[in-house]
Length: 190
Figure 1 (cartoon, rainbow, N blue to C red):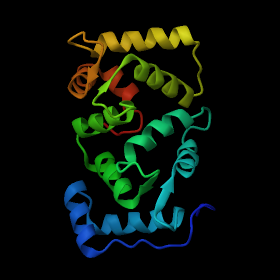
Figure 2 (cartoon, one colour):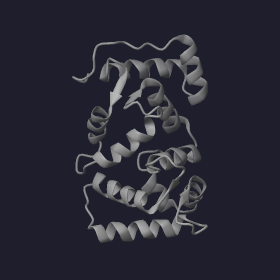
Figure 3 (cartoon, rainbow, N blue to C red):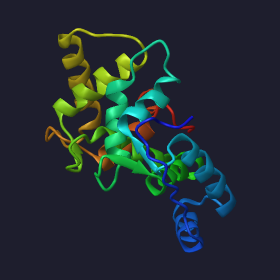
């Protein structure tokens, strides 16, 4: 399906890279090879832009607008913060989605929602989360309702009442509450 902004440059993983990422992700070398072929079909230069990522993701949410949610995901998946998701970043995420246990998936979800990468979720980030999830499903909320939902989430997750949700609080909160788990891990098979 190639992207017009991608230059033709094949980035083939070598045997040692496949082995290393296979060990890290639990994906077989065969799975990685097939995944790489598909990845290069979509973006022949081996780099997935945020625009292309959003376009691909929106195919799953035709009744809503996943743009804000995609931005959060993209920022978390682009580990080296170079503005692109390369195959290794992509394979790492896919390894978690396909082979990770619930805690691995919740850690990934936390990384998506920790927008500024500071190790915790604050109220402003909770508001972004609420807004992006509702928009993804084609619903919009007034600012006051977004604020109220964010406050409710802070109260549910922030067990030490310091105004911040840590990764541990997020994971424990989701493990205690199946409804929260379904909301915050929308695409992950749990």
